[in-house]
Image 1 (cartoon, rainbow, N blue to C red):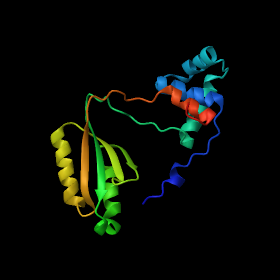
Image 2: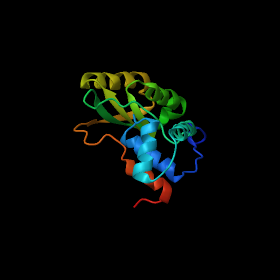
Image 3: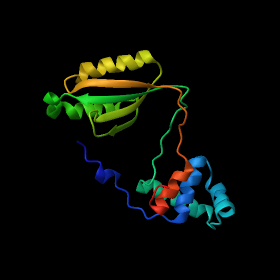
Image 4: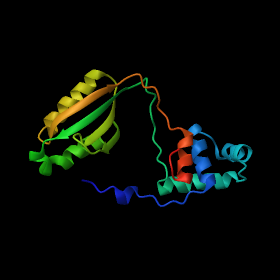
Length: 177
């Protein structure tokens, strides 16, 4: 498989202001650094210039502390969870092409590896169910030798689609309370 530890490894020592910046960014990703500096001072008693706020955000972004993604409003797309079960007979020869096919596909929002019977999972977006069905058909035509099953689940009534700002507090205390 692809070794992602080296490319995803993040070396960052969090300061309290970094955590507050991340929390405020998750609440309002469009907040200007001037507005952020004001909020940090008035709500968190952190005296910091807007230039420093901007620099900290840039350094955290460059270090890989957070990733930025454009997430379309869920009303425009049908979301689906796909799980890929492998056919071990052809896995050694065909896994990489299948993995890259999924990873590079424009419909893929999130792609990850998990343990258990279904090892690859992806959250995908399609404009309609017909396109989703065609994608599965085309995937089997191109990579059916490496998978014995693609299980797809329709994601409907999406009830939450955001990161809560409070999650960043866990970076400071090291535990989930």
